[in-house]
Image 1 (spheres, one colour):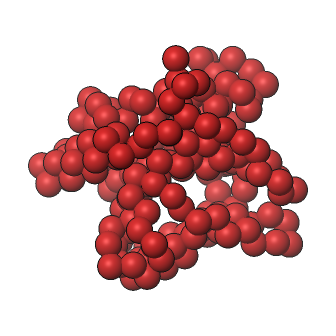
Image 2 (spheres, one colour):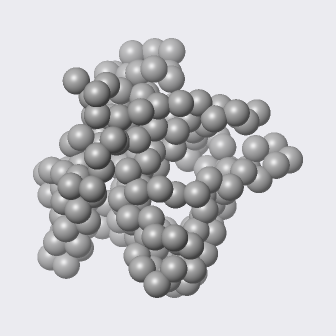
Image 3 (tube, helix red, strand yellow):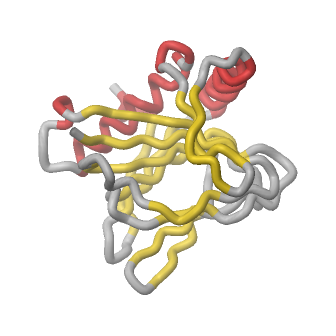
Length: 179
């Protein structure tokens, strides 16, 4: 049962934002990094949203990233707690976001296809690799990425990622639950 492998809490903002995470993420994150790189190197991916010199979204078939299963299970478990509906009828889409040094992710939302919940899980988050910025009405909330942590929020919440000022890759996987 995923309960013993992760932790979960609600953060205090005007719009609800939740934080959870795996208790021992290192082996899972190492597998995910390896599987991500193998899929990209082999051309087994589709990339979209070309902004500022990079593709923001990298889509890989779930069969190519078996290491994603414990993360997906954790995120689905949290979605069951957050959403007041049967999430098994909802689709769960995912994509990777790889930010090299000097890259950022532009301000956006995820509400274009009737999504119900969005999430981001951090696979590799070096110091200085860019905070997640949640736009909460008139406030901008900085959330420092931590490998093994997941942040969940409504798809209507505007968010972006600061410039990766580290010397390493910042790698995350995003999820949307929707119809």
